[in-house]
Each structure stands twice: as C-alpha cells, then as structure tokens.
Amino acid sequence: MKRARVAYAGAIHDAVEVRGMLQLEDGRLVNQKDVVWLPPVQPHTIFALGLNYADHAKELAFQTPDEPLVFLKGPNTLLGHRGVTRRPAACTFMHYECELAVVMKCSARHVKAEKAFHYIEGYTVANDYVVRDYLENYYRPNFRAKNRDAATPIGPWLVDVEDVGDPMDLTLRTFVNGQLIQEGSTKNMIFNIPYLIEYLSGFMTLNAGDVILTGTPKGAVNVEVGDVVVTEIEKVGKLENMIVGED
Ligand code: MG
Image 1 (cartoon, protein in one colour):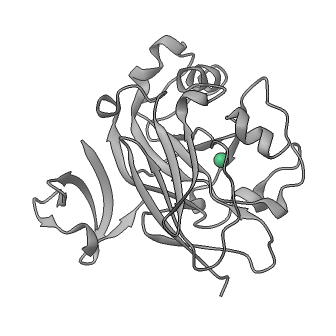
Image 2 (image 1 turned 60 degrees about the vertical axis):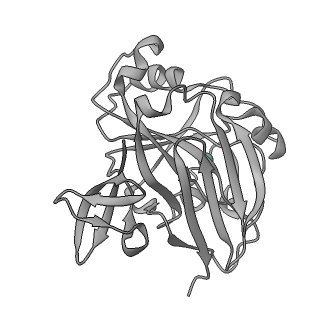
C-alpha cells in the first residue's frame, strides 16, 4: 500500500493511493493534483548518513568511513512533495541528494541485523539538500549545511515494506529540469539497512515513525533558482521539488 498525508479543502488527511487517485480516510476520492502534499511521516528523530556510498565520498574527496557517519536533522527540515526549497543568495554550491528513507514501525533496541526488517514500516524518497559552502569539515556540526527549513523534501508516499521487496537493490535517479543527472543503486551502500538498524539500536532506542536517510550515490551537481528537481527511487516513488530564491 502507498500511504500519504495531504491537505485538502482546509483539513489534513491520511490518504492511500487507489487507481491513481488519493482516497482520504473518510472515503472521498480526490485527484493527486488537487492536494497539498505533506511529509508522509512525522518522525521523533530523523537520522541521516553521511558518505554512505563510496563513489559519492570519492567525488567529494573524502575518505570512506569505517563506521557509519550519522547526524540528526530537525523536523523543521522536512517538506512535502511539490514543495519549494530556498537557495541562499550567497551560496555557490547547493546540491540535491536522492536518498532511500527508512521509516521505523516500532521501538527498537539491540536489534540484530538479521531481524531488522521486522522493525521497518516502509520506505519513502528523500532529497537531502546540502549547502556545501557551510560544510567545513567532518567535526564541525553541519547545522547550517543540513538543517535548513524545508530543505529536506520527503515523500510523496510511504510504501509498505512488503511492497518494496529487497531495498538493497533499487535504482536511484535524480532529474534536474527533466535531465537525468544522478544515478546509482542502493546495493552500493557501504553500510546497508539491516546493519544501520543494528548499529543505531545498539546504543539508543529507535521509535515508531523515526526516519533514517541512508545516503546518496555519486552525481552531486549544483542547482540554481528555478530548477525543478525530481528524485526517484524504483518501487518507492518520484519526489518533485522546486528551487526558489531567498526572497
Ligand atoms: Mg545526505
């Protein structure tokens, strides 16, 4: 099942996809074009992986980490499908990051990798924009680069875990103004999803609805005001966003 959260006719609704339409929880069928898309989840904690694809680490001239490089994002960062993200006027390098996002089903602590899939609700697509001008090095907290308001579009759908099958063999693609500009496969993650759940739950509790952004492959290119950016993951969805200026 593909689930969404939308605003329609002045109210917020849970919805599911039915024959290309959105069915609201009260049974009404509405056109996908007629809603405002909200992030499909409201997480307690948002985890994000840095440098989780070796080819992306290489293009940025960073060493491949030997332990997951995880940081947190605030809920202010999330934005729904077809939203707009602001590009700071003075920046020189802001790029998208197409990422498979894992949504947790229940609380998890000390979970072994081989049991990890029992703890996953589903998957969605995220675009983890970064303003690289503000990223100085590994050790300085990356708030200005990674925790900007509405700079992490996510959605449109939360797709149930059983509908995706093996999440470690999905094609990720980013299109800027219709042109394919980033392509990779989740099979090239350095730390795979079961390992990440074992790793994180080994020292902290994961909660229902928490989101793990699993990193992006090679192909990070600067985006400009006016660009339409589509991040797409096989079997999970196609997330659209537009870049606007700071005013
Ligand atoms: Mg990222």
